[in-house]
Image (cartoon, rainbow, N blue to C red; front, side):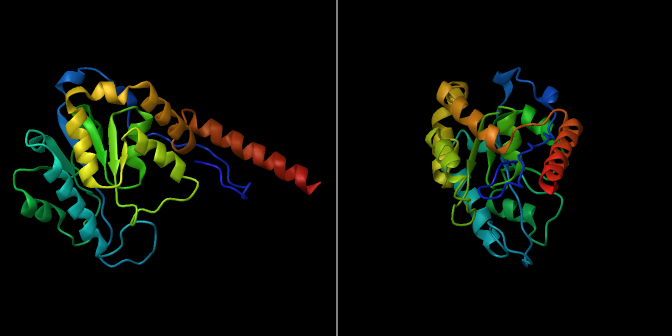
Length: 236
């Protein structure tokens, strides 16, 4: 959660991490070899408007992934594991589209728990503005994100934070840039990811947008209690 200007009723709370940190403990880093590419999907016929691709624009979105894979070096392409959105397909036939692009590419249809995939992942790549990369950020897992800013528009308050992510090469506005960066750091991802500057930027971003809540129920109860006290003061 985060604050909003001119809206004191918005209370920053934090997020509950779904991924199990104990399962993702940083160990045997040297045997991790996958590039986990996590994708999303939208309905073929849109019935609401938000800051992401709608309806047929999803075809442009998925093509960005093909460009990303094509832009990787020859030795890295076989390491890509594309995880498709598995709770709905909306008639897009995602697996067939990926197979039409490349029958050699590894695809996960969502049957395997994502914690198991991440344990074998050297770097996580997210192509949409949603929860998954926020969780890997909070767990300090090497992550690259890319999307077209024309589709995934940011609030003005958020732009400075993403500019900082761009400076440390976490955020990219094109698939080519994201792939080029991975090509460059693959041999020593730790030096890039655990650098002092990147970790500082990551910490500031997490404090603003994905601050983890450990005692979820207790904190929620305290927030409600404080709001009631404030309401009582204002009503006197």
